[in-house]
Length: 273
Image (cartoon, rainbow, N blue to C red; front, top):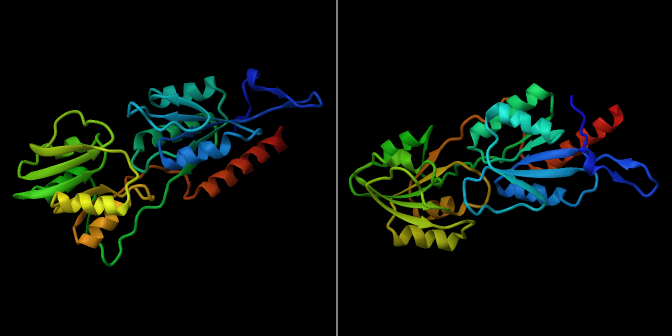
């Protein structure tokens, strides 16, 4: 396993003249949990955290501390970055549907012998009052809602909106942070908003647009759960896209577990130096 060492320009001298070696940690973020983790690590003197954002929106919420934006260029590019920046540990705090970056991170860390902490928030659970159609992918969701004169609230992000381009009988209210690109359904309206959203807002939105179906990823977390609550209260069916498999390594479900594992790895590294 690689040592969690800093680069030479980040070695700080302690008051007694000895050197304080701060391990370098890469946080794959773009989520609320990634932002919170960066904030909790930013002021620690015993490590050096770098947050990485995919850059898929032009004005992302930037975490506290050091931030890089953009892709890595596949597994090889990811591994090269880890070596160049002398990263000693990776924390994957990406979205539950961000499969490619998570798999690249696994492969790159395995190649270099680096520890990977894979965080994934728990999915939403269906209650007795929920009307869910659980599907495997967006194409299956499209086949369910493409009915005559249906009205759909599509809240899955802009990148997957093209999966519904072949729907010709349904009207879509497409909510996204930025304008979707590529082909879109024949009948649609785009609503550019950034969450989180409160329950009253979501209830009003569904009622004002006479929504018949809600399409959602099972993202988990609290930021967008209010649309699921609103659909439940209004007895509107939800077409829920199940999560893909992101990881082959063990995962943790809370930031507290992430922090405990970070501390364990740092301590383990110190005892082996």
